[in-house]
Figure 1 (spheres, rainbow, N blue to C red):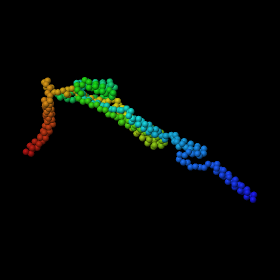
Figure 2 (figure 1 turned 90 degrees about the horizontal axis):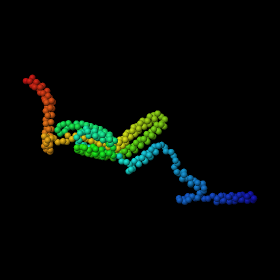
Figure 3 (figure 1 turned 120 degrees about the vertical axis):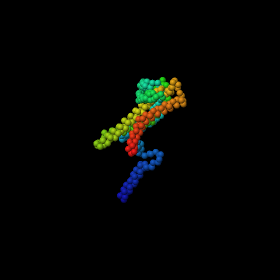
Figure 4 (figure 1 turned 90 degrees about the vertical axis):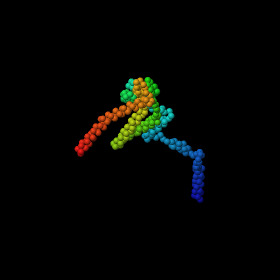
Length: 308
């Protein structure tokens, strides 16, 4: 009987202790969207630390290619803005009539040097006046600063007997210049990457292959730099082409102090052309046609006489 009472007391005590433990532990509630969490302190610490875990860590870039690409993109974007300085290539071409061709050529050469430009080419030749005499003519190409192009054209026309034609043009090469700059930036970035690859390569074949690619990229860089420099000089220095004609070539024919005009002048000019053509025909006939006829006729006559 005592043993039964003891077992009953132990069982009741166990039930009481388990009930107290269940009452001390809070029930676990499912979290609902937007509802605040009332879990324990450890759970609050986990929630607080979660945003720090989801943020991206500061990892180093895999290589400098990304930096170069970003720098190149930023440079391209800045170059394409409306604030980009325009590059315009200005050229001019004139035909002037002067009294002394060689003197005017010397004056234009001096003008180009004085303005800070230079002479590109000079070509002096000979032509014929209406009366048949030889007179000089010339073509000179000079480059002067674009800011002084107007002043240079004024000096070219100053003192001329006549200005037969004048053409002035401009070509905007801004987009071409920006494209060359972008390509140069990309090529230089590629050259840096190839240099790093070649320095870190361990196999001889890899070094040789990388070196060949680097040589090609360096060649492309030099070509691009040359094109960029040419565009810069073309925009800074304008080209002027001047055809210089002697005054004698536009003077009308004078016969005894009389200047025939219109039909009379054309008739005299055609008469001169006729006699020039007739004399040329006689010379050709005597020196070419007649000897050929003689060399053909003599064998034919001899054969005829022999057969007869």
